[in-house]
Image (cartoon, rainbow, N blue to C red; front, top):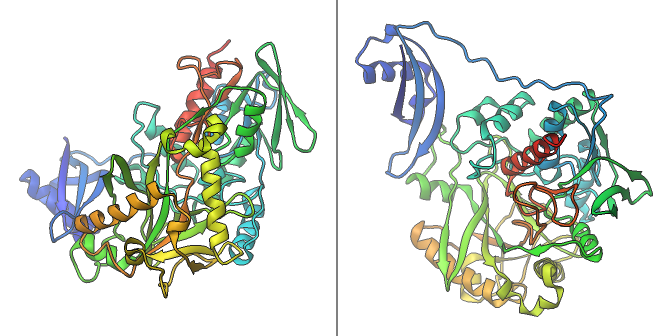
Length: 518
């Protein structure tokens, strides 16, 4: 028979197949020889007590032949000569998975990406880190795979009702992600592995007949009778398709400006803004695992924090154990920071965004910009960060304790941010409602995690691109823009996703809606 069992093991035991079989036998009251094998269904860490445990959910084969699980392989068809063609603006997770879904339905996708391919894009990132030069069309946000290519690769989402999470995970494994993402409670790929996965997806799209065009920045829509007839790119080319999927990501500000100019409906969307906090990873390990030194069998510890302060939410965002802080600006003269981790999470630092919610009532000074109030607010803070930094993307920073006590840091700890950090009073960059709430929250976080509030932690400004500050409305049923019947806003940039998985699911959902139209 097959039996579902949950085991609570020491980290060293969870790595030992023989020990797992012994525990299965003990749990079932049988001999080890009666356990023919097992499938791992879920793996998580329980570090609530002084001893950390690994919890495994297992499907055990007891007195029954063990059956290997074959990977799920999704098939795609040839669309070289397909009559139906759909334009996809943006080749991030939403655009890529929309393209895959269209191909599966016999529709040819034409992807227009403003940036470069992964290989070329990597050179621009190196220039950005070493020389502080930002290419507005090729950076951590723009290029093949979008922000997802050089993100941390965290794959957990709460968007269970938006689509088939397991399908997305299985597709990622098919394209080269580790099988562990199928059973880890908090699946993670790693920035070092994502570029290969993205290029593998592109190869399949092209092999099936989809078109993948780089350096194609969309600058205009030609709209007639409430439909987009064609779209124009910056090089003067025009493209036509029966529908347009707008999957441009949260940093494509020019798209929002263009839509406002054409009097197409867009809306303010609440978002969050703050700083990126970096600790030595050993501090976080000691707090979370209640030990002086993390055991080799345990992964670098993470954390999740939230606090209500003066009626506002302050919370951790995109926590990266064993990671680095990266420059995420998309234009010269601004500083934006984000974080990522390699697959092994083996860097000596832990970083996380600590951000404060921003609502329309907080932005009275930007009210004349209406739906774009949040965008202009973001931009103003990013430009202040650049002015307060040390030039060439050197970011303004402050020790956590100095930030809370209103002191300029006389020295700064070693930091993973490659362009470098510069001591500056962050209260001169962040507006009072952000600064004051962060000050109070760090003290409360220190109570929740003893040792978190420390002189060894550094705050780097500014974490401002947590999500899009604009929502592009769409009909709840047709998923079309209310004014343009063949325009399908999609993913993070349109305000309908918040990460790789939710963006991919939204891309699939929109593509299937288009496919259903006969």
